[in-house]
Length: 76
Image (cartoon, rainbow, N blue to C red; front, side, top):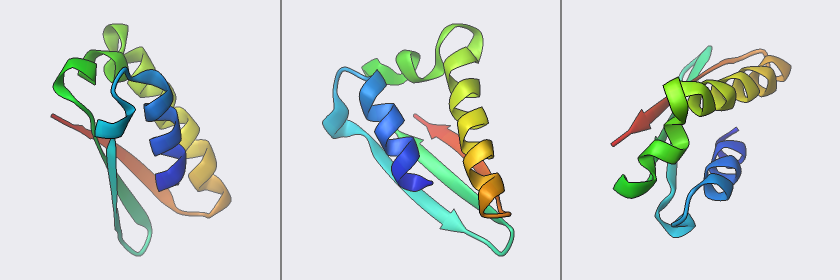
């Protein structure tokens, strides 16, 4: 799931080298932290948060296969 988020984020931003994804795993939940360059933050969030919500939807569908919940946090 970490690789999926990194792939999507790198495709959206102008500075793909600055994308950093880390994963904190629990028993039933994984927290995926996404860091991008400050100037690319708006591209990840999108208008009214639609892009971020879309990434979260894809992540939820992917995590349902593993029977594990995934939460995406976008960090400034």
